[in-house]
Image (cartoon, rainbow, N blue to C red; front, side, top):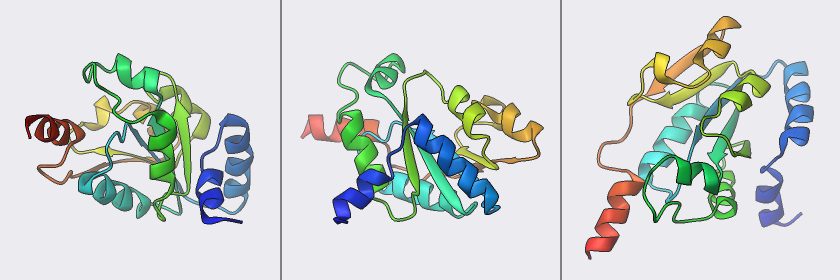
Length: 164
């Protein structure tokens, strides 16, 4: 199998994800979930996702669809990269096991479907602000908030590019 095929195989839909979750649970794997737009991959993303991966055995990353990013109100120019590009780039990180694109405004339904053991979000949120926190906590899981690397955001990179 070619290396790009390996990366592409990590991008899964709901049906494949359902089968994978069944297999992972049979092996008692600790499933970690996080999500984001990941429009321009930067140091902050790599730091955050690697720390999320450290929280369990398998990291599943939900990537907002293009339509979902537009609805988040991040500006007319966003997303800068399409969902195929963004999901492929995230799937290429060796510590990311699976990527799933979701179209809703929040990953709530995806979290309900996955039932992760650990739900991870940046420390710019409170536990109560994290979509799906109640699902994870109700089944005895954890919600972890990870400190973000200061000075790194897609919005700040976009502004820097536009001003140069």
